[in-house]
Amino acid sequence: MPLGPAPSASPPDPSDEPWSPSQTELERRAFRQSRTKRSAVISAVSTIVVGGLVIWLVTRSAGWPRVQTTFFSWDKAVESFPAVLKGLWLNIRIMLICGVAIVVLGLTLAIMRTLRGPIFFPLRLFATVYVDLFRGLPLLLLLLLLGLGVPALRLPGVTISLAFWGGVAIVLSYSAYVAEVFRAGIESVHPSQRAASRALGLSHGQTLRHVVLPQAVRRVMPPLMNDFVSLQKDSGLIAVLGVTDAIQAARIETASDFNYTPYVVAGVLFICLTIPTARLTDHIAKKQGWHGAGGTL
Amino acid sequence: MSEPSTPTALLSVRGLRKSFGSNVVLNDVSLEIEPGQCVALIGASGSGKSTLLRCINLLEQVDDGVIELAGRDIADPRVDADQVRSRMGIVFQAYNLFPHLSVLDNVTLAPRRVHKVARAEAEKRSMTMLERVGLADKAKARPDDLSGGQQQRVAIARAMVNSPELLLLDEVTSALDPELVGEVLDLLRDLRAEGMTMILSTHEMGFARNVADSVCFLDAGRILEAGPPAEVLGDPQQERTRQFLSRLAS
Image 1 (cartoon, rainbow over the protein chains, first blue to last red):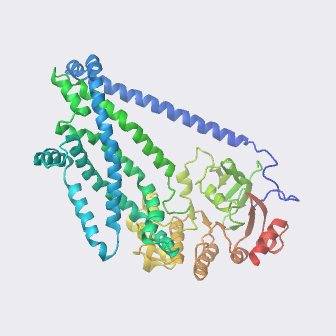
Image 2: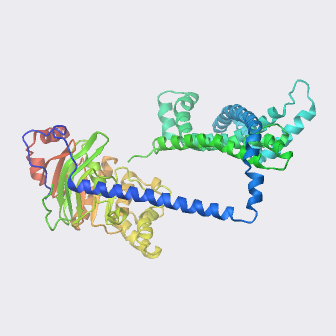
């Protein structure tokens, strides 16, 4: 027999009696808290042990003193820092400008690929060929072809800026990837959403703009941010064209005395650049959670 | 909330409280169920029926109160929740079948992965269960190819295949067409007749009246009224219960 609470004359108001946890619950909380503390201690100890072990293994190796002076020289790091930082500014500019161009181009390509109807066949074909081509070509090869090939043509009125053509190569390659991410997002929106929108009288374009894309973009935000982190690093590839970005600046700094510390400096700077983006990605993914995943609990 | 439970009770909930933020969803809820009994939870949407079932299945961490399964408090954090859950079955309103698995694989998943039953044996048991719910011929189909009523029967087979001690059913007919409701209710009636212990939240008053041993009326997170269906549904003592029932009738 289920036991309800003692029947009372009027429905009890939940707010009229302040609730305080029972003895059982207090004891459970204490247990959970002790568990949390224990986990924290275990993770701290294991981190220290593993970290210490790695440091010990590296520093006791035979070549360590030599590696230390060649890669981790503090004086060299301080000396090369301004030049590398100046080079990094070029990476940041390339990354931001390319980032915007990639999103616009990628989204356009994705929409072109999802268009239905025979009239749009040429657009679909173009987008498909574009993606196949530029996703298949190694970025390094694309950089060399465009960066060295196009300026060599000496076309009138066309810039021979290596940074510009390097940026174009990055945009071509990345937009092919990003287009596929967007397309996956667009196709993941359930057909019932389109049906509901068309039933309200919205056109295909309006449906895409107001119903499908907002859901699609939210859903693919984490992989897009992942590509953005990747772009931040790959902007360093334009160094192969001889453009003075962070990596090229580091290379110039090493040339005088074969001390490779500037590379480490550049590496640290790139990490500092990508970490905020990575945390932002985590934050977005967490905030989004399962919302919009189309299930009910 | 400290009075001891009836020694024979399979499940005994005492003083259960659950809130989401400042929203108190369950407030001092107590109920008991003997082996082989069927308890129906009724009440408006948002009254806490689903949350109560989810708490019993340990899908939610309770704020306070005791949930005793066969005499052992399962709300205690020291209890292995997976082990407890493997002794219960739960069926959801939206079926929650795994769309990437066939009907048979949906049913064999837990026996094979949780209970480490060999594939052949698990499939044999699952096929018996699918026959039981009348869907043996759909074993190879994907959930998406089935009707709602069929999907829900698969979900019941999935919950029943490990011979749970307790079956929790969360508005299992709410998402179904009226004509499909019957096939699921008939199945539950059979299970009840075979002695399955179950707690179900439902809007099907006819079913609650005919099949349940007792009915609990939940309102704003409290059990306002509980007792045999003839009393709670036939002669409700609380004004709120009368209101709820008359609105359903109209």
